[in-house]
Image (cartoon, rainbow, N blue to C red; front, side):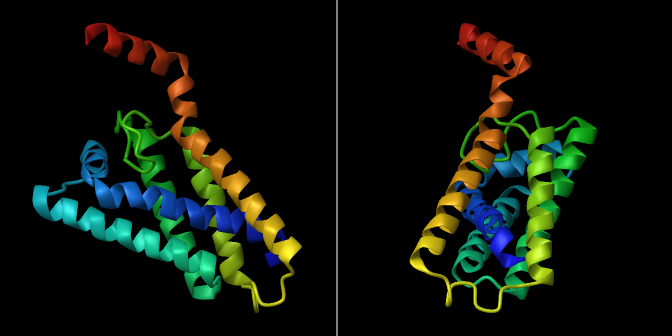
Length: 184
């Protein structure tokens, strides 16, 4: 199963890193998003907790790429399950009008596409955790590694664009951006 899931799994792991780094640098968007979703987040400790979570997100993502196995795949699945639950909650409640800061973009709220992609990442990581690779990189040839890495980059890029850029192209987002620019 690893052969079929390696590219999507590595993309999910890479997105943990890509989404975690901006939150380490600036936890404020996620703190605002959590508050908007109805969570009580105290100012100073909240930012520290978000940073700690973001550092863990980055560490798990790097670990998942370098040494895929049962435990780290379960951690990737757990992280994406939390993200999926949060996005679902936000969509149901109608909260979070701005970004959670995952991609460093100020105006990319969660969407149904975001929900679907995090749910798929949860499933992929759970499948890898259930049937982890015995030696993910040991027996792989250079062409196989290059193809897998290339596939992971393409999937990760497309997923990040679907989550960070696609929501800004809706008619409502374009109208909102136009109103914001005309007021400024």
